[in-house]
Length: 150
Image 1 (tube, rainbow, N blue to C red):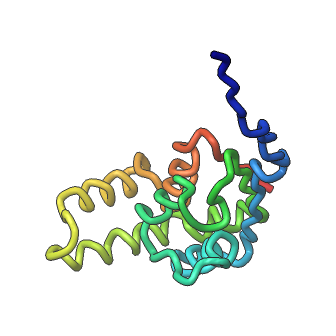
Image 2: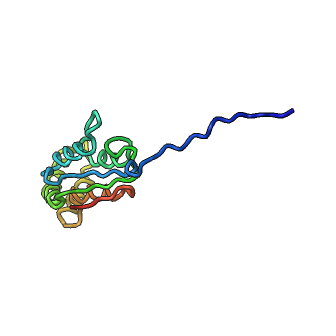
Image 3: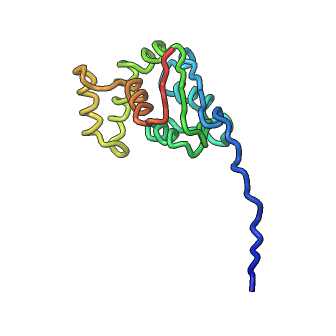
């Protein structure tokens, strides 16, 4: 007895364009003058197609780079071109960071004031990170993201 098995035709793999895997995002640094405007710019360039906005949180900013939502969803590699990066470095620098940390110290019911106090001491002693440096470090923690200052 002979067996005859009919197999379905082979399916071609979907064609994926290289540009579909790489996403370039441009941050306009002169749009950033403080922490709220930083998040406004991030929401403008990375969350425009979402029905919700990213909150003013470094943890939320970090979560963005895992790629489940926003402009980078579905992209293997991301290049962020940060125009006027020096303007942003200044806007998110020492004074902004100091005010940000001091503001947290006024809310011991929410924040670990001992940890915040250590961050503030380190900043004031020249050993701590500014808000800008923290943002850049967060981006740097994600191997699939390249930051280009312009």
